[in-house]
Length: 289
Image (cartoon, rainbow, N blue to C red; front, side):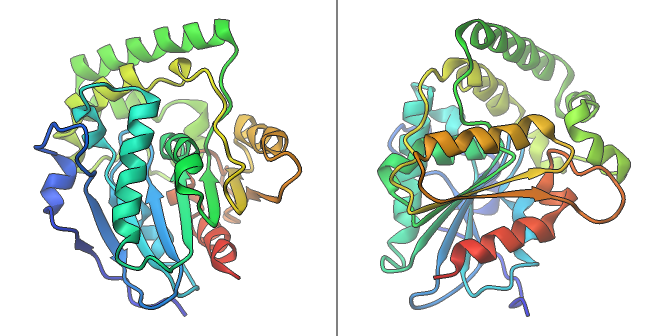
């Protein structure tokens, strides 16, 4: 049975997790502790997706069966980096994970990232060397040059739309994409917590500075002891991405899970709410010796 889920913040407040106030490159990102653990129980550190927040992981945490702590990092404060690119963002994530691990340095590290957070987790893997890397609906391969240029243009246009229309209107358009068909089918599309509205300027800058079109090198995943990848059954591009990751692992273990929520609806990109039980099962497996 899953232990009762409790949430507490680190030494910054929950509001600070939404609205960081320290524009210092070497500062840590805020995080919340969604589940405590002691001793040598695994330490799960999780990164949410674009326009998200740490509590996006709550449905997954509620379904965990394994004994492990769970810490979710807030990514909107990345916008405070004086230099906003993937190397600097990955370095800030790595420092934050190391600070979380300092609480229990002997605990195995399970580093998990959803979508945009998966890209960051993959980029930080070379420094952190997690026992297990779990990627959820994450594209980590660099795009071919022409596609990269087009993606930068697309993300610049998205940033302009977000700045112009605001978070609520932008998310209604964002969730209308085919990759979120599972949200639409379940009546979840377009619902955004009020706390995310305050982070709109941060996500405008992140869209521009951390577009996948700006990442030209494949991340080094070789230092992860094990790697797991989960994609929605109907999210074909990301199922294919999981298959391509086998080449990056150079024959080392990679568990690929194709998620089916079992409710008759499409299972697409937003697995943290479409199929949280499947994501929890993958994390349970990741925490196994």
